[in-house]
Image (cartoon, rainbow, N blue to C red; front, side, top):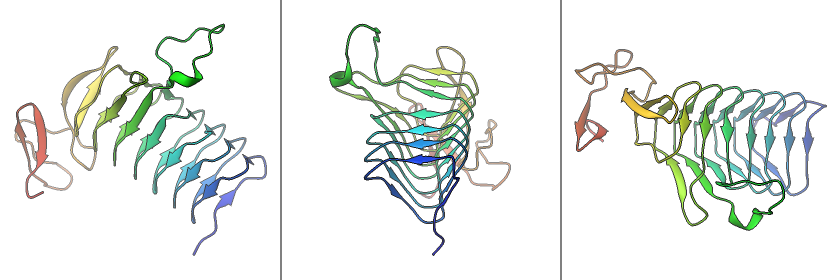
Length: 193
């Protein structure tokens, strides 16, 4: 068992759980009642919480804030300065804490540097499908299908990526792993799963 490594400048509030092997770097802040899984890497100047769940194996790069209403499943990558929202129509002078929307990033999703993920309405969630890849600077305003490659503002599907994060060509074979995929009804599936 490897205890978590927490830099001396990081702040961990009350009632937080930090899993074994997790690393929390300079000037990061984990707010109360947040749960951080095992072997998570939290970069510099990251704010998480309150009441946020980060699953095992996630990598959160520098200058990311993950607010209440955001859930990261296992193996999610958050690039530097990516943004998660939790209010659809913010105003400085109107309290909307009872209206937080949700964002769920499914297993293996990648969110590129400076990408923005806009939350769903207070009665729903924006969902990033398993192993999707949101390109740097993209602005996601709706659900993303598993394995989708999303680019632009607002983000649109430009193609498909494999579990290994490789862009798939017309043959839908991963150039890194040789895994084969098939497209059915505008969705991608790994053959054999």
